[in-house]
Amino acid sequence: MKPTRANRTGRYAFTAEEKAKIDAAYQAASGLARRRLEVLRLYAQGETYAYIIKTTAYSETTILKILRRYDEDGLDPICDEPYTGKRKYPATRFEFTAAEIAELKEGCKKAAKPHVARRFKALLLRSEGKTLAEVATATGFTETNIIYLVKKYREGGTAALVGKSRPPIAFRYKFTQAQKAEIAEARKTVTLKRIAKRLDALLLRTEGKTVEQIASEVGLHPMTVMTLIRKYQEQGIGSIIANRKTGKNSQKLSERK
Image 1 (cartoon, rainbow, N blue to C red):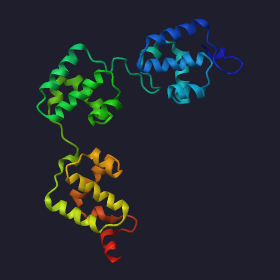
Image 2: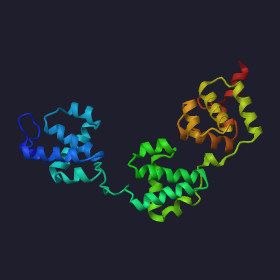
Image 3: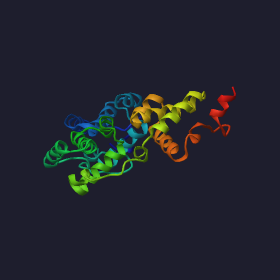
Image 4: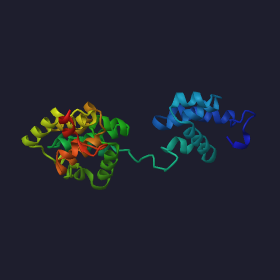
């Protein structure tokens, strides 16, 4: 396929041989490679961009990048590389050997602490071909955390997974009974919805709920929940019930009504 061989409609023209090679590669491929090859296959069949977007869930920009990459480098990079248009990562970037998988399974069984077992589980799921999003959903890690765990394992083996890691700031704070009573009392008097939501988040945290659970229940982003916890522990209840729009204490405002 060459741009100079575009037909009268402005589309690239594929030879019968090219179509046959793309179809054969598509049948043999899996994962992202199969999805990229489907773009070429459908395009070669004369399907519209709208149909290809709907079928593959790629944007038109990504489809054009795949077509351009095929035009410049042929079929091999489409089949072998997880091409993103930004960086070229080796196909083996997240692949695990049979020995590594066995090592991870053994480490998961022997893990004495839940947080360590969770790290091993994340890598095992990754070794099974699960996407970063799927592993994140199953383990509670962020996608960045998972990439970091893979890197740690590659560099230091299972010992790097068992070693201590400092928890996020929100998890290092503990709530006393006095603080719990203070938050509950403030919640009774606050009427502004956005501030009541902040206090609800803190109350759920005093009950032992995770940041993810709190975010889901009150409708805040997990990072916002963590920020609220830190802010309360460092600056007190006043920083939580302050009305940013007026600069006044919302608790006092509600008492005047």
